[in-house]
Length: 483
Image (cartoon, rainbow, N blue to C red):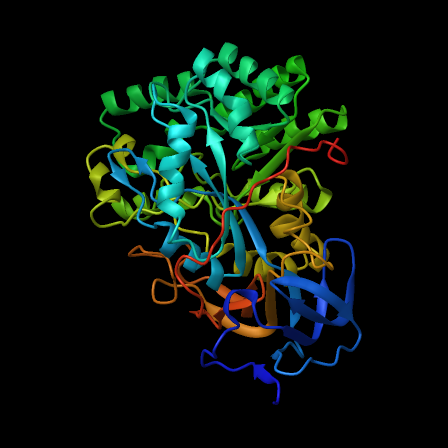
């Protein structure tokens, strides 16, 4: 029987569940460390061989990658699907969110379990498992958010690590809801270190934010234009400095989520240059959007209300340089989508009530390729590092995820560097009524996306199956190479 070639704009029958042998032929492979022209043999959902020329086995499916660039599937380590937040629930669940991820070239996500106060960590984990199982279309893991710290939480930490949840998030903001004080954060850092976990922080000075926002509301300054005023860069810089000091005292590694400004980046740089294990992610919105969006769109500015907010444009070049220089290791999305109509407008009379977050999980790889690689700000190997290899290494997924190597999962995204497009509400796969990057031109788009050897997307058309995504247990944090 002849081999079947998969390379057309119309969806073709995809190898189901990695059972069929697949050969990806004629592509140029890029990893975080090197590149070459090679074929890839996939068997049982794993990469079985890489060679200059692989003769397809009988009945194998052939993915024609000629003229395409082959990267490891993206790893987005910061998403919020079906999250109860600010009186509503984020619009994308694990089906729609991971479908958008797959179409955009991301084949693994890590979401956040956020237990309610007074409820156990393992109870929260079961609730999030129930949200994902039977829905997720790509593989997924979980971080555990800690919204309080007491003897019961401390006793559950090692049990959570044994479940393959090896990272813990603490909030230095959202006072009265999620925020931890310095004493609690110090205890968490020490405990996580004992159990092989990595602590990440949302770094904003919560007391400062409460004070500023209360004054703004009292003065009648309630429109979304005041959201960035209520979340100044100084609050992020101060909290970053304090978190680094606490981590140093605990002798523990530290990871910053959604770093948005130079005030925080200078703290990370200083710590890393001093030999401290401090890591950071930024997001496409901070690299490409700026706070001018809040001042010229009336209430429509609510579409971009997130925390931290968009910053002055002068920060963008510094963040790009931080990525290129290795001071920022990853680009995630902080995807937390809310519909403009019916959710964002809950805060039409008070910006402090606008649900925070934007849709982005399906846009990350496209935007980083166009505005990073094609603009010369990132090499292709750096693109592979910040979108896939580094997050996989930091969060205990490597080399199962994050690279193209024999024995790794066959998670691949085949970019057509010549294909052009434009981001818009019409093309988005997110379950919302707007695009946060409306009108952004793209040059270089995913032509084919494979997850464990199964073609799950072709030319922004989903071809996979609901519920095929698997939970991935992660290894303990390894600080080697990150100091």
